[in-house]
Length: 257
Image (cartoon, rainbow, N blue to C red):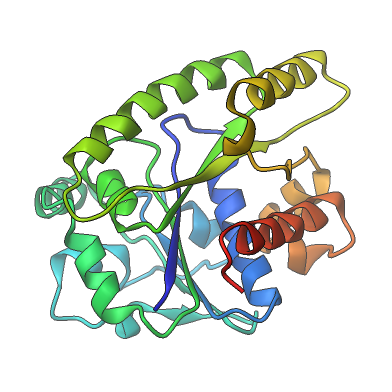
């Protein structure tokens, strides 16, 4: 049975998609079979991985074509053990229709439990929202990761997310939601507010925060621009090392090896 990990954030620009790409790649690099699903209508994963061709089948069909097997929506990559289902929600009409289907908060959970069993891990990049697709991603998850940029506005967003998380937990009658941890991202030790916010977060939330911090690293930016994960672009960069460390921390913390 797959372990389903979802990256969620109500705030954009916190490194959510980049972290999802690089954790999935790190898992594959570590020998685990991994599927990365892009539920964000912006479709950033496709561009970040250098896929220039239009995606004819993907996230849209997960919700609107239940007769289409997930295996038909999956694309393989040059990275061994790593596959993708890319976003192809190209219009507001598609997005609206999908959100109607996704009113059943467990629609995605049911599909993945039936059809994604051949992977060690499924990593989901959820929309930066609390819409029905995001709720589906949260309810489908075994573990939820919340990326948090080390800035004051992000801390306010965190408080709101935790309230929403508690509300969703009360409404979920299938199983207990589990927050794997808060992941500090885009950290620059030379910026005083970053040091202050990270210290505040660790003091307030202790075990709920990953020990691994994702640094601000030009290699991550360069890799994305070239359509690669930072691990495939520069394995010796601090960004690649941090994501591999995150992978190891995650599988050890929850006994997933």
